Length: 210
Image 1 (cartoon, rainbow, N blue to C red):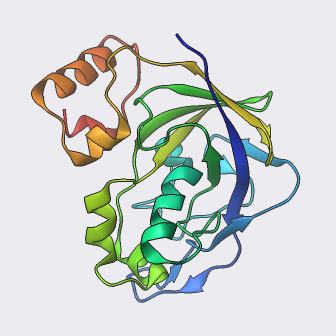
Image 2 (image 1 turned 90 degrees about the horizontal axis):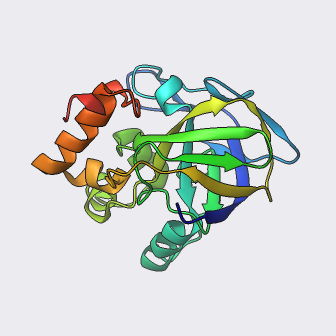
């Protein structure tokens, strides 16, 4: 596999729980960059939280990554800065695909941490309230620059400035974007076959699609 390398620009975790009109009453979407090394365990960054465990968090959604390149496209369209953490991401990365990452590919971040791409982020009403942009859920979905969730394969610590390297990439070639926008029959068959053979592990939300 050709080496793919990027960089970790910011590590973000919850700054404070904010009141929200949703059913939970609060949201943990207010993520902001933190200095120094941050420990990463099976369920994500140390001291990070999710207000709604039904829709966020868990091993298959332990870490959410968004790329600087995609954030830049939104900044140009909206005429405002898309600072690291604004979209609720844990990792703001550069030089490495998030939405166009292949499902099941693995990243080594720094020297310790290994993460595995699992699934796309689905925009919700909490995200729309956070952004305050008209028709935000539909606009975000239409562009489909949704970023990716990752599971933690190897624990450790990471910090802004760490290199990111893709160390393994499944041959099926199905990207997070294709999962989000709709799988064709061949995509679904390839994902299902590899999952059943134990070559990669699909999260339950993706298994429902294949």
